Image (cartoon, rainbow, N blue to C red):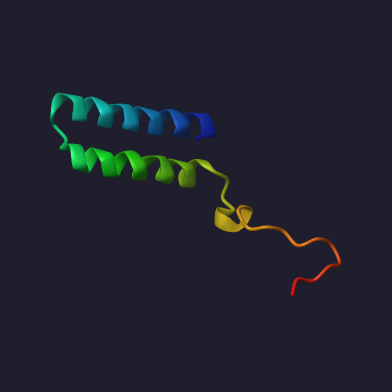
Amino acid sequence: MTRITKALIWAAAIFALALANYLGVVADDVAQTMFVTLPVLAWLTISDQRGCMSCLPRPNDGEQRA
């Protein structure tokens, strides 16, 4: 599955949550929590497979950090 396909699926899920909240199917406090949680989960699943290693600063070649 390509990254674009994954992103579209997550976008559809977030849109469905917004629609369910608008229609009263999902309570406001649950929807508010999910509006924070879903984008984080989307970012974790769409990003490359290196995990959080891409977030960490890389040391310069030949230099050691104290």
